[in-house]
Image (cartoon, rainbow, N blue to C red; front, side, top):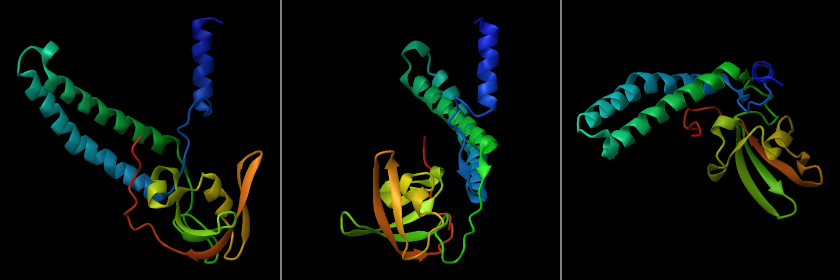
Length: 188
């Protein structure tokens, strides 16, 4: 296959979403947080990074100038994060945050009983960009998050981890919490 045709096939695949993992289900609040971060990075961080590069460049020989290379790296990381967030916004599918009062939905805090372990855990269901298992925020795209969505208190739910592996949990309590802005966006 010639280079031009390979490029055309690759471009069509990216437009259709193939070969790209940038497709996320996000809430309007996620988009708003991303736009705020982009604005901050463009107006504040970008100026600081450019100034740091300019200042480090003035120190002389660039081949052995650690400050210059560090400042350049920081500037490039900022630009990369801006591009990443802009692409996520462009390709995102907006999902609603509202759910029935008695059903598990996005931003709900759920108390779950793990039958096999005889333990209870409390999780907040969030979107992929805000998931943080260390803070008990699980993604709506995770096996547990997917399984819980739409279920009610008292339901016994099967969580499929893989084709051959699953376990059961019971929903003990659902708290209808809201996005209060404390859930930070993940760093990639």
